[in-house]
Each structure stands twice: as structure tokens, then as C-alpha cells.
Length: 592
Image 1 (cartoon, rainbow, N blue to C red):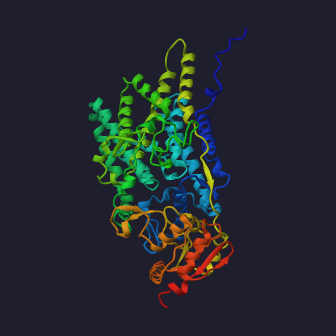
Image 2: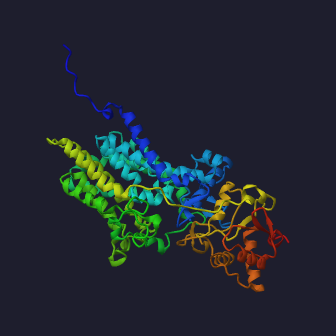
Image 3: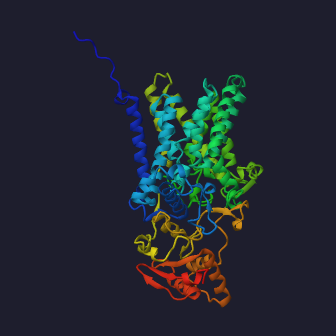
């Protein structure tokens, strides 16, 4: 008589750990493709609605990485925009650690495709990295690790930055950095572990230094919260932690010493951000509203709850906010949960900025006002502290699912069903939706067909009309499409005020009379009357730029008023392919 068959395991439990990891990573990649699907349809012709400057800037930096790899160009400073002053790239998040690996894609398909690849991999990679670290070191239940990884990778804050900031959403090194810091507290080989941490820190510094600073601050607060609860841990932890941090500091400090010198003391270095950005803070109500790029999001309703749509760094929704509080109350006896609650709560308060508000109504002065002028913190955008709280919520979700799954209740199936239902209730309103996109003008055929090469020499500039600035970045895309083979004046970047190295930062370089005039014409459609004095002043500016040609696309908004204005400045132009061209070499040649 045959022996009775044992209980059959479910298909998921029969999979190897590797197959489980691949399956979860594949699901995260599909979700990232869903989020970026609209821009994938036409990477060069679509951009996030409302703000178009940051994608153009990132594409410019990706093209710079091509020049670094293929032409041996200096990586930390460039004169290819804001000529002749140039731009300090170390002070502008030039994403070298992302751009250099993407050089083959950028060369073959262009920086616009590289941009959307980075956004897709940033979301999926961050979610997968947190899943792997959680599943290997924190929780045993795959669903718990997947829930935590999902929220860390696809939270409303991450979706908000996805349209504009691939450097901010590329957080796939952070879970490994956090884990290596915790390993140091009990390491038997602290020097080796400290050196491993230094490699991760160095790589993250070339992705985004602000996120690295947030990670260090969060780790510090979390460890202090743990030690405050269990001081005895310090006796065993201080020695390996001290040795490991010292080893990390020596190696990472050596590797980053010169780049950081360029950033803080090199040409076009600045100290601190402009007051407008330093004042960016979350509204308290932002924590209870769903993010704009989510299933339950309402862009209009969120208008006054965040500095702008690219900085929605909270927006958990009512259901998840209440669930996070309930998890802390339920698991309050666990030391790690209390430490996480302190960490998330502290940075949630700091993210409110200098003035705490509720539904756009100012209430009191926030604690951030005491910290905003400290070194390093003076370059932080406070609303982004909400990204730390986001990770804390993701970790709380993972721990809660793990604890619920492990309950030894008679009704285990009911408990697990309720757990899954609770996750759906909390996460469904903030489920990611495809990012909103709008069409943008194509790069002119005059640029892509290399017709500009007839006019522009190696020490001359091509001047796009309007002159590139924070609000007019199409000229930066033109340059990026040629892998920065020509220089342009102006652009969108951070630089010291009036070009004086060491001054506080601002967006853009020295004020430009020509740039401001043409930007006003492009906006209003009104062509001003110019006198001879204005013409001479504007022509001097063109000489300062060593301008070879001025280029105005036929599809540019208010093209006729702009054409008439440029003709008043430098005389008649001529149409070539899909642009108006003014050859000003005779006017700007200093030898004449």
C-alpha cells in the first residue's frame, strides 16, 4: 500500500531563492516600464509637463560623460555651456557614475534615450536593491521584503522625482550602504568592511551627494536612537565601528579629496543655495494626500502642498499614513521599530522647512531654521528630507508584514488575508501611474545635419535664440544631441552669483542683457525698439561670448518678434533648413 503523500508546497515555495529574486526584480522592472511608458514612445520628443529644464540639464551631463570617455575631457568642469565662464560640474550633480556606464547607449541612441533608461532602471533598481537587502538580512517572508522594496522604489516621492531627477531616484546603492554601516557595529574585520563601505560611498558621491548626506544623517540618528534605548550595545560596537569608519574615511576621503576640492574651492564654486530653494518645505497636509503621479492623485489639489510637482517628497495618503502610525503602535515593544519611528519622525519634521504650514497656512517656525546655515546643510533642499521618511515607512511595512505572517494564530489564513488586504488598502491609492508627458520641439535639422559646422570654430559659440537659461533649455538639448561639439552661452545650472567664485549659489551665470531681452520677447511676443547705445552694449556681449552664429528655429514660439529683434541687433539673417541664421563672426572677431 502506497504511503500517503506529504503536504504539497505552493509553487512559490518550490522556487529557489534565485528564481524568487529574479521574479520580483522582473515585476519591479515591468512596473518601471509602466511608469515611463509614455516617454518611451518618443524619448527625444516628449518631456515631463510643467518643468522641462532638469531633463535637458541631465541630457547635457550625459553628453559630457561621452566627451570624458571618448575624448579624455576634464570631468569636473566644462566650458561647453555658460561660455566663457564655464560651469563647475562637481557642484552641479553631473552624474558621472551614471553617465559614464551609459556612454554606449548615449553614443548609439542619444542622451534622450539614456535619460529614460536611467529613470527606468533607477526606479526598478532601487526597489530591487531594497528587496534584496531586506530579504537577506531583515525579514524572511518574500512578501514582506517585496512590500518594503516596492514602496522604497515606487513611493509618490520617487515618482515625483522620476520625471526630472534620475540622480535622486537612483538609490540602488543606499540599502547596501546602510547595511554595511550596521555590519560595522559588530564586524570582526572592520578595516575590510570599512574599505568596502568607502567604495560604495565614493560611487554614490558621483551619483548624488545630497542623497549620500541624507543617508549618513539617517544612519547616525538611527544608531543614536538604538543606543539611547540599549546603551550596553555601545561597549561592543564602538571599537569596530570606529575602526571601520576611520578606514572608510581614509579611503573615500583620498578618492574624493580632489573632486571635493574642485567642488568647494575650484572655479565657479559657490557656497550655499539661493534662499528660494532653501525655503522649500513640505506642508503637513502633504503627508496625508496622495501624490500627483498616482492612482488617487490630484495635481490641482496638490498645488500648494509642495514647492512644485518635482518635489512632492511626502504624499503618502491618509490610508498609508494611518497604517504607518498603527504599525508603530502595534510593534512599539520592538527596539528597531522605535528607532525607525524616531528617525522617520525627525526627518519628517525637518522636511517641513523653516515655516511649518497646514494647507498652505503658516503656523509656526520650524526647527530647520536653526540648521539651515550650517556647513553642508546650507546646500540641502529641506523638503527632500521626506525621502528619508519614505524609506522608514517602507521598512516599517516590511517588518509589519513579516510579523503578521509569523503569527501563530489558529486563523493563520485569515490573518494573512487581512494583511494582504491592508497592504492593498494602503498602497492602492498611491499606486504608480504613467508619468505625464508633453511634446517638445525637435532638435533642428540645422543642428542634426551638422550645417552649423560651417560657421562655428573650436573657440566660438553657437547662440540659440532665446539664449539658454533656466526657462529656455532647448539650446542645451541641441548641444547634447551633438555630444557637446559646440559651445553655447548661458544655460541652466548652479553657479555663484555674478560669476564670483565663493559667492552664494543661484541658477544661471552672470546676468545677460541680450538673454533677458530675448527671453522677454519670446514670452510676450513684443519686439522692443532699440537705440544705438543698446545695440553697442548687446554687441559687446556677443563679443564676450565669441559668438559665431545666432540660431532661431522656425518653430520657436513668437518667432517673428524674435527675428525682428535680432535683426535690429545684428542686421538681417537668412533662412537655412528649419532655422534663421545670423553670421556674426565679422562683428565679434576681436582681431578686426
